[in-house]
Image (tube, helix red, strand yellow):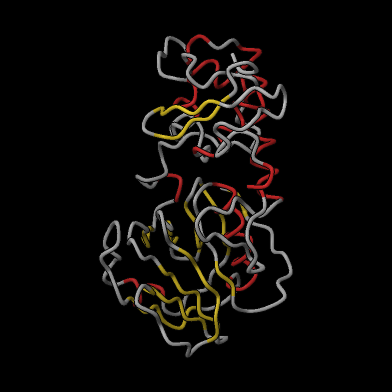
Length: 288
């Protein structure tokens, strides 16, 4: 698990969203200083029918427990207590807000974590594809997490690993690195960007990429994700970071969303195709 750092926040009310790993990490770092060490007074569940049902006894279970740590595994936020762990996934449209007690709930405000210090962590999810779950087993053994691949920003992720797992695979290398069983958190935006940076054609068969090129690709994945985290994520739809500001990595995108525009390296027009029904943008001249 990745424990989240705790930056200084200038104000109390914040909005968070979670398209891909950098946005999850931004969310994690933003809420951690507000709820770590805080005791839960109650949990208010207004809508239990999310992607999976919210446990009926969640409020009874959590009342009186303190949040020991906030961490991230893949796109899941983990709130650890002495009795177990809350697994929270924001789905496609969910967000978390830190606010004072007493603020009126909106139509899509489905779950509130109310703390004894007057802070409320509110989960909003218009499409209801998110999840709020509870487990008493080690999170790494939970059925949603146990089969996930390594974190791309930790030492156990490497080009050697990608190369070993790619043997005899005919799937496109873009789909390969987006497979959460291979490596977590490389969503569509960042797969496009990493492959562009590494000079690898996204349609190339995963099993036909050399070790040296996988070593380069692994490094590019790390660089792209780290840059995105530093910029607070990528603004797509309504994502904003812990300061209530949009993520600025979109301004640095060199492939994704630039179909038809000139390649930043060679000036040739970028090509867009669909791979596994996902927008895929590349330079036919620079990537091979």
